[in-house]
Length: 173
Image (cartoon, rainbow, N blue to C red; front, side, top):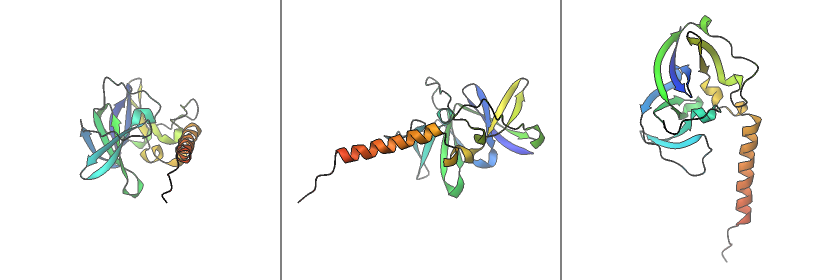
């Protein structure tokens, strides 16, 4: 049996392995940082470390109800002791799941941002409702970027370079 921390996003239930979650924060102040990607809300000061905060709904191609705001942050640790806080609507509970109860993710009909590699599996959370189990490492790996995201990042980089070339620093003589 494995333990999963469950949470809500856009009227759906999601889960991540408990060992990937370092801590859960409630109503924690977020500092906006200029020129961050749309899904990044800013940073938090977590015991002296500037930890980036990602709007998980936007990362998954979902909408995030503005009136509800960010209620909870789940701090996860990625490879090489990198941490990021995931903004979610509500943290629910820790559940125990049998590996046999977890269904394989669908291979067709997936949103282009939510590729099957992001999904570890699906499990029935209550009669007629499925909970999506996310693979945290895949959410943040470069190889899991959609072509659209990669193109968007490249475009941002090119615009930045163009702006720098349009306004070269004056040489001091």
